[in-house]
Length: 146
Image 1 (cartoon, rainbow, N blue to C red):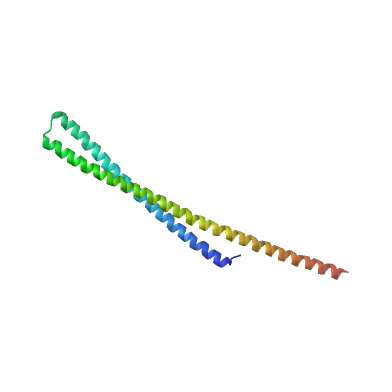
Image 2: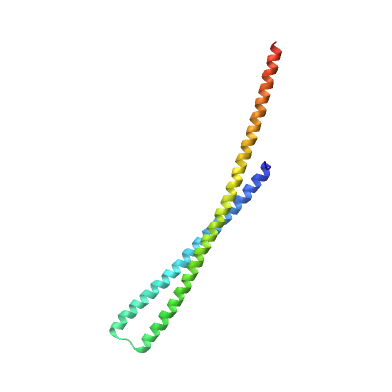
């Protein structure tokens, strides 16, 4: 079995790695939420602008206003498409960080299992040693009583 001290060191290191991975995962989740908020703002602004254009169009608009609307909506659509890519990248980062955290947790749990097994083996060995001492003591006591 591995040295208990070395095993505890490995557990401590794995726990630290797992904690750091969990922190990175949390940061990735917060960043993704922010990117989605920005996307929702852009989409909302586009919808609002399009609705305002529709109401203005009912009263009549000039060709220049129509052209300005088309250009601005095009820019909003481009910004929305870019933000959608940013959101997707953020979601991918979350999945990568989650996978890394799970790997760290798996490693930490493996070390915990090894430590538990080592402790069980040590305890079994200690119990056998104590039983042997008790048997020797009983045997000596029986010899002295004769």
